[in-house]
Image (cartoon, rainbow, N blue to C red; front, top):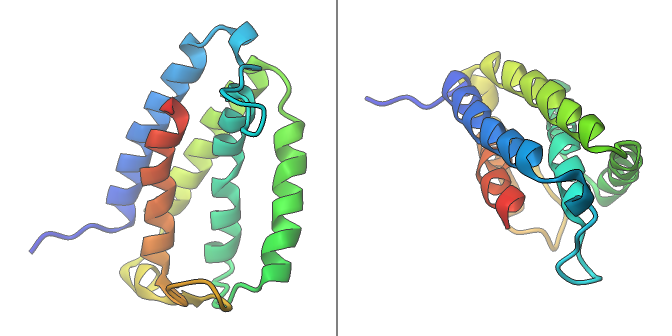
Length: 150
């Protein structure tokens, strides 16, 4: 039987984060302000978002929150935006990608099977209304690979 748990999540997250950091380092700083269209985040804003977003997962799953309400999500979103806005330079963003990425990977390594199998519920109209912690955490790895290079 093959088992994919916290250690495997951490390993694959580290691989994806390493690739994201490589892109961030190779991108000239004067291109961090580039926007494909006025409605989307700039490259720097997207990389700052990628750096900060896993911290919410540590909060939710570390505290074993079992129900997420829109008010909770909205308040956390405001905090995330403030943290992202504080990352102004290429050096700040790369440092956050490294530091937050390793903090998140270390957190993942410590999760046991029971925690990963436990569920979190969401209010309507969110579908599915219930997700496992594993499913929620896996998204951090899978979306970051495409987000950083798009």
